[in-house]
Image (cartoon, rainbow, N blue to C red):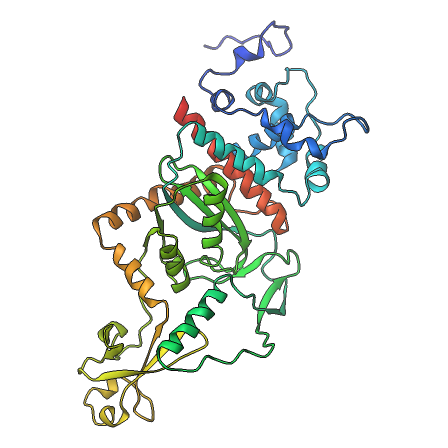
Length: 447
């Protein structure tokens, strides 16, 4: 035990690099399961065939990047240092023990010049999804969507306040049509068109990364963040869509558009979805019903003023289109607002002498007003799915699919922080991370 061991680090040995990599190493299983030949054809248009200096092999370059995202190596310089001494990494890249490793500046130059503002990362991600489909690892019927935040590479104290124009959402034209139809049904004149009205709001804009967004959410940290809106297939947790927005964008805004994107891109026949309460909006519920998708959404506790009746205690009579207050009195339809809400008002003569008025309204004219969205019927039908046996089964799997996918990304793949500045660069990080997770999942399922 106390005998001094001779130094053998400088002795010459004849070994094969293939013998030094364990047979069950993750990179071996990925190499067996994933076909990387598509990379050459995918990037052909970015290279000149008969001019310029010899380029770094694109397959080698993207495999380098995949190693970084697979093992959570955040720095490109650190990645190159790891490849220099890691036999498994060299084997995966097709490098020998004495072959020269590419310089880190080559990776950054390709990222900032050759592939800048291109859709190459989206195409790579899509190709990995298609390979998963080829191996029957994607069901294509039930999907789970959620978002997670990545801390932007920006100090939350360095910002300026700016006024920005409110963008018109994709569903607004359809909502305007529904409002007009609702007013006609109730015998009201159509609302006059707005005269070049431009709505704006004040936001905090980072001076370091202006494309990030200042996020303020309950139970979440405050600061500048990006959001990754991710959709996961129910069968084997294969990630089918990644969409990056600023941290101040509501989850429901891009949801229907991204659902349509994966349906068109991968020819999925979507029958059901499971999402949390953040997606429980009239527009999303109506859009899912129009697409004939069975949606299950989490419960959101309504806002309530202490000492007053809950809104649920005012019962809606669909047949007569009136609300009944807890005392059994009617609230009659008055108008439909430009925002899409019907207004139902009580009779002030009755309310003025009501013993429960103090629990109903503090209006000086003794009028209680209840609002109901023109698309509220869709919300009520979808909310009922949550309590059905099928709805409970679908929603229970949400924590096992998309939430587990995010947890894996944050714990193992360096997903808590944005590596770069700017939405396009952060999008490339998110797409390559998701592609790496999918490759790992495919390899594990096929091994």
